[in-house]
Length: 208
Length: 252
Image (cartoon, rainbow over all chains, first blue to last red; front, side, top):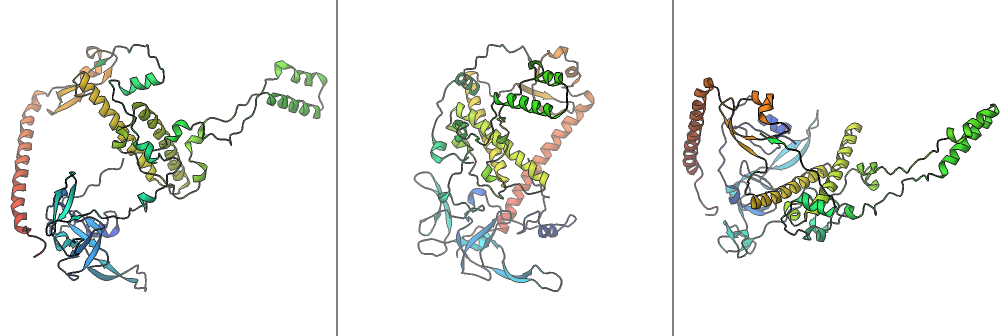
């Protein structure tokens, strides 16, 4: 099993993954930088999910609405598609200055809000429970439930369009209940089914 | 593998491999003896030699059974050979496994095991050929499914044991003190001989020697100090963060 990735306590998390060269440049082994303070938000209180439409409240693109592409929980960052961009060159080599592309900068969580789907205006969000007991995001102003956004999976699979392969169990077979609770252990039940008679007595052993 | 293969349970027969060549036993020896006799007629030999080879005591009947050894189970389905990616479904979840009977779980375990062996073979072969393995996430899915199956079986065993005996742990153990003065949960092991005859066990020291005793108190003090420091730090940080991040609504 792979070991859990360990970071020093003053590791500065950036937008690149830790194994990339950019991240290694951001955190060289001997560096000591000013500590960046991140507002502690509990896991249950996080309300912006990937694929949500949010509005920017401050910054260059104030007032614009965009879809969330990435969420960085470590720094309370959110990256929107195509908004809050700056321009840079990538892939430069030798004399060629590279391609000029727009790259998005991360926004802090407190600078974005979710949008009420009814009137498409920014609103505050609370976590509340429905009658069935489901925990949902509710807009404070109108009381409308904001549904979880549908986001395409990384492997490109759309669950509604899935076709079972030869080695896949069909959904009906998977959900079929075959368990009847009984006072037998798995071994006893299996031995009964396979007609195995075990007459040998276990040898005396000592536990210490 | 939306849970690997319930089909394999019933269809070990269905999915049989017609490409396996069967060689029937009774035809073979005649062919062998004929070949031998032909061979001998080519060479200039004396009469008694060919008689010697043809007599029954020197002719072992050649029997070859069909190559049905099951090695093909170590390899993927033939239509997946040479593919860069192989489609596979989601792994089994613990919730789905809990509704299955013990017999089903027993069968599923072996199905998953065989699939895991097949994937490990494919991984090793890819390493040998220095090529990327097609769809390595299948291995992770199988491992997770097996882990969850094990968890479900353990849960059932725990429930039964608690009901019938009231024992919380399946494996006996007790709290003991090791040579360094640390108290830990010592898990018992099974032995064929009692402890007073086990010389290696008698050499193990489950007590702290007298020169180690002062350090127990010191390490306890260290632990308490660090706990208090952590609590104080958390309280201090709470005040700082409240000042740094005032609670205000996102909209004015």
